[in-house]
Image 1 (cartoon, rainbow, N blue to C red):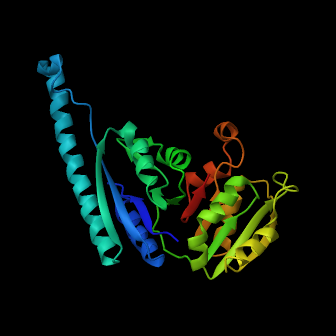
Image 2 (cartoon, rainbow, N blue to C red):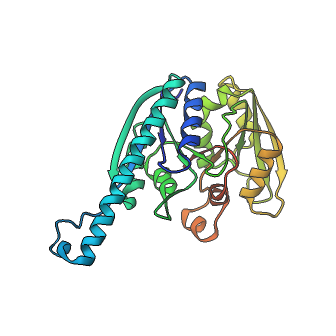
Length: 281
């Protein structure tokens, strides 16, 4: 059971969608919701010896104005979170952190360690540059992540859940981390893509169906032949064709180095998820 859930409330255009989904998700699981608002700061040049130079002074003035804008954006994001979480009666707390953009992943990771799971956007941009939050939190927090699409409305639909199963350690971890979600579902599909990699010596989907039954979760198992397209794209296509609203999968089933070089299902999914995805490693 999830008791406490953390949502990283972006201060950008995704803030409302993220917060609304997080509040509905927490309400569905009868959990409390904490919001993490990160205010992006800048290195302070005002005390340097060059601060009196005309060029440097102009830069300092610009940064001070931008800092004020970022502060106002953080306050608006926090107020929006408290309004939506309060409306769903799931409000726990709001945490405000200030740091430079390079420190955001560490700030989110350290906070995520203190919650049952964390909700994050599929990507976050600061000043036009992407901030690699997901991988840092995934490998460093020890907690499951729920990655939400950035570019589309998100429906909180936990009635039909698909588990992408390959018998690996990350997939096993993901299933057990997702038990509170699976218990809420009325339909759980265990999906295995065959002929994409050797699976003979790994636990089968039928074994997983038996195990979930011990947790009072009824699931059905299906094998789908590898189509030749990137396996992440095939998984997402299969999930959407089944009308599911939530995907559970292990992250980086191969070595991390191989994933970085060649991509893999995890990276494909994270490039553009169409629905919420629970990831564990």
